[in-house]
Image 1: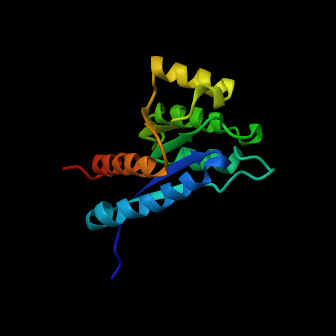
Image 2: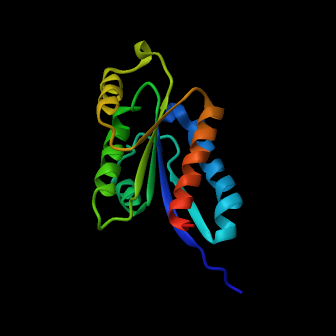
Image 3: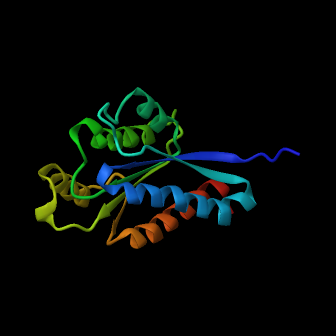
Length: 166
């Protein structure tokens, strides 16, 4: 007997030095699916890339994957990662997809690691200041991987609730 599930893809974008948090994303998505989604036949499918290789992160396949997702998670530490990764462009594409009614993107969530400003690159400092003035998405700040896991869990459950309904 076949069991049909409604599937919503969730893309997670992280710099290579935040690989541990990408793995937390993959794991926590499974935990939320098991506890909340599976009984209701709705799943969040995690989409992410291991640390970028020398070929560059933001290629056509990645852009298409972002366009096909319903939700987008950007995890940001003290930098956007190596220039070849173009993670800021991935975030900007996700915002554009969310604003395009023809695409499935519903929401974008930004998770900011609590790091001292003196450790942050200039472009990250500028970005963090700009989102405080006019945020285009849900913004959370986390202290460590456990704090990130808790906040991500809450976000994933809210997203599942938004597609499952009452």
